[in-house]
Length: 248
Image (cartoon, rainbow, N blue to C red; front, top):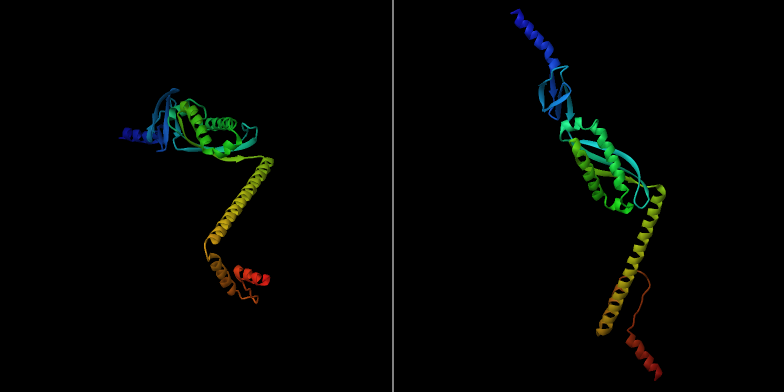
């Protein structure tokens, strides 16, 4: 009985030393005498001290905030560009064995790739084709991290900062473009208005009695005015008749 009790106490005392817990979002990399043995899934696992060692790897999606990078575009414009890289570990053993610190390695790889990508395009392309350039950076980083057992799911360019002098130049150019468009629109409106007036005049001239109807309509509009001024309008034909009497 005492021997059984001793065994139970020994198991209770030593069990925490041998037992390791792996959470659902983790994988355990087991090494036996320094050699990789296997990758263990979630649950309680037995690890023999001294002879075995286990390293837990987080398998969740991670976001790497790439800080502002100083670079020069293809058209020699200095800019600062920042981005976010989303990735997750696909092969826990490779991520731990093939690279010393995969989080730091992904961050450094993202910085160099972003600087290189920005240097191959002009500023206009960088601003107008941000999604396309982000996808190109994503493809390049993902290809390099495959050997580390890491899958890069997305790369998003956050900010593109320009020098203050260039910002002022772009603002002046945008203002000049807006003024140019406003002048063109006004000129187009004036042309259309003139065409409509000419068309209306031709229509009134070709249609018998149309000018008299338009005159009566104008008189009706003026009669509704509350001012003290009264305007009398006589048809042009009456004035011409009076001129004929004077000549006689």
